[in-house]
Image (cartoon, rainbow, N blue to C red):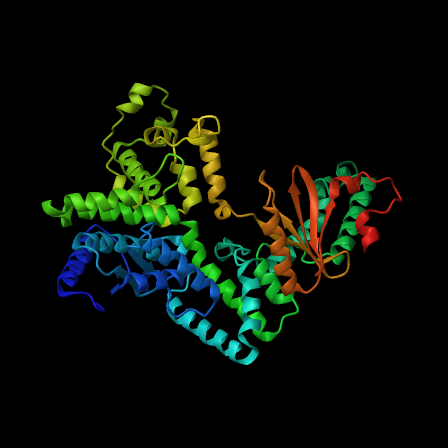
Length: 515
């Protein structure tokens, strides 16, 4: 095992055997001891020391280094989702710290291997990252560092504009698409009529109505011909790769950014579950099998720091591990199913215990099938929130303190799910790449009650323009008004759609006059 000591290697082998005994199933895991400076470098590169050169990684490294030097943060471990997996331990840590981290790592690697949201990730990503680095370095040598870095800047600014769920969706075949098209053409008819009742056809499907619907369909198809793509495209990076006027090297760089975004996506989609699962197993093994009496205080000190959560904060380690423990307890006691859900007697529910003993089986099933959104949606209960004091807090300017704003469980759950959906980032799709019939790009923001930040929105338009090279627009809602914000390469424009729709017939809009 790389450069770890003999004593630590003995503990690694022992903990690996323990983890297997508990039913964890993981890839071979290679451990290596690194200095705090090396750990910060690895973290800045997203865990891969072989990534392409870019100033963003240097900026992240400086931030991590200052945090460590000032005592604000410390990275105890890092593990990479590859086969074999690579895990880094921090030099200078106590033996109890290393034992905790090794147990934690085996929990992570088990999750990487068995959770279905990781089934499409490339397990040889270390080699892929090295290949990406080689290609980008060649482009830097050929076209110049500034040219390539400027283009990478533009790509990285929109690296989150992908469809994170597309790898899990079965793509329709051409035959299925054609059958659906034929079905839609027939949809003008109210009801199909069999041969024995053809005399009812003119009553069920009035000719005037059918003619009107067919005319409307033809008009929609004529409009659709001017619109591209036919359906909104959520994978903006893929659309730009295919249709933006890019040089071969630019298309390749954009593809690299996109591929790496998809690699990291499942980790973002399962942050609470993954950290909770690893924390569950390190605490189980440490308290039952690994620690001796002399290590209890040190373990409690480190573990409490990891699990601490302020009333106004959100700690995925704490939320995840407590939910797994709650699920295990409920399924051991039979607190699930129709009878449990329909029981309204508080005393009965409090003492409910059928001795089902299905807790371990259930948490392994959850680990395999869920992501953070479905995990929270299904297993975050009102009883759990009350027990763990999960409330919505609001800052009181009068007292200068955060105070409980609401104990309303549905609102708490709704806000948490909203933060987890798409990582709390706005959902943006390509609506029309032939906007105004001039090849301008129209993006649409799926507005769900929260406005986009104007500065970020405008910066995104500027960066998409660098790739599309023609005017770019985005339709969104700001201050309860429907607007379209655009960038034509020189200046930002803004059009209020609600005001435009109120214009008298025949009067030109400001946008028409400008164009």
